[in-house]
Image 1 (tube, rainbow, N blue to C red):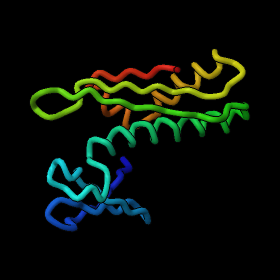
Image 2: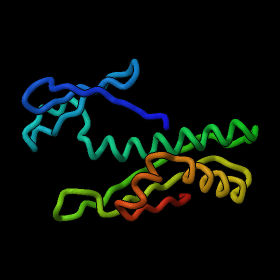
Image 3: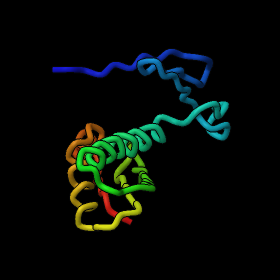
Length: 132
């Protein structure tokens, strides 16, 4: 099976640098949580990864079908559980300029099934994806 690898290393007492292929990003905590706010927190990146993975599949499905769907916006929200620290529920709302809602709904379902992050999270948190 293919695999995906990300390399990380400590930058200072609160921050981590991640190297993803030729892309780099910083992971840190807000100042109020003891960090320097030099990057997003890991939980925020998990939500961004879900939205980005989903949208990548959605855009590929749109291109493959030659459809006129544009101006996609995605909002991903996570509801925190008390203990252990985790997301108990994650909600993703997808909106777009489209002419045919039924076609867009079908693409959203296809993209959800193709998204590695969504498929991984489904067993760990309540995940809902809806059209806004």
